[in-house]
Length: 177
Image (cartoon, rainbow, N blue to C red; front, side, top):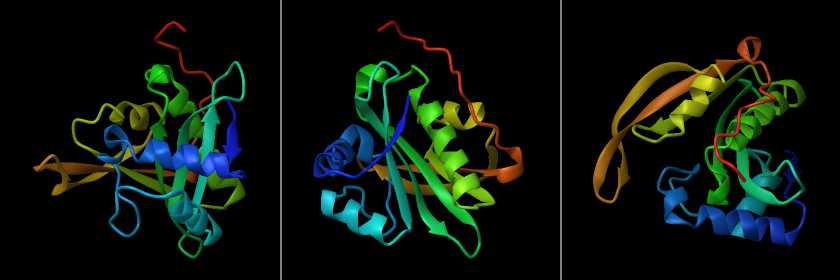
């Protein structure tokens, strides 16, 4: 599995296409409250350096299967928010999202000099398992603040300090190829 920079128009198109799918965007919120983004929005956000986005690939080749990002990067306070989306659903529950997030955490802590990275996950989202595998700590609950199909849900907030991070290289694959 590799992390690829978005350095070609087709990368931006692919990332935006995955993020435009309701099964993905319903769990997300970007910096200005939007849930869907365009390739142009991604490109501008990356240029502002408030967002670092990578595509992650299969183990077998360099075929992109998902997106992992650090958003709301604050170099003064040395913090950021992490999120991950498996775009190709045939690779869900195989450990790719966990490994991609782990590598992005390493990039944030080592290359960007961050000290704390946080995330939030809407209650009942299976992605909560990723935070546990990566040793994030629950730091709070933001109540009734995320709307999906007219239903209000809580967000569970987690954080991880630089000193607590250990890169996850192997996550057992739970589905056969």
